Length: 265
Image (cartoon, rainbow, N blue to C red; front, side, top):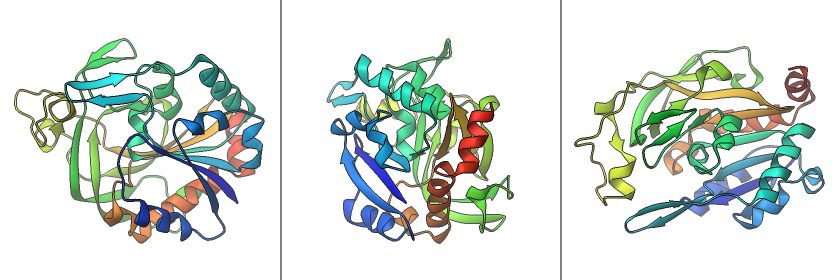
């Protein structure tokens, strides 16, 4: 298999990250950074790949006084939607949930939204999202029959970053839930960090309890989509369970079964 691996927009440790992808049996990757990667979101150019893996966060430019949200180029949006209409598999990882905040349809494609600043999601005003690094938590498999969870134990521990964010549970098929408590007191405000320069702070910040769903699949147009919240840093990348999840997810979104499942809707 040959996948296009898309990065940039959020810092990460490159050596261990590419070691992770080199370890995946039977999966080769071509790495392209944003914004150059945008040209590949096209039905013709995507034909050279079995799937895309997005570990990127385009559409945000960080400044000392807060983030700037960029509108994606119209031609990019059109080609991306044409690619989804053609039936093409995507795996979105971790901070990709925050991508293209000025393009509401992107959240519909992925199945949720991480907000760096308060904003509207599906016509509802929402607070900025929460984050918490290096959380040791238990992951519970809620669909053991799905190919993405094949070979995994019913539950396992991982140390990773978690998000208190918007998840469109009614529109996705759940795979993984965390045993961590997704409540305001257990997370820090994203806006405090990127706008106010106050990391690890939740003073004066309010957020409703959020979904503990951290892995799902969904259809968008005729394409199979997988989102995994796991995958923040080398500690998580070294997890045998995460490596199995990632390999399974890539193989599934590229499979004939996944494409038939997506097109059947």
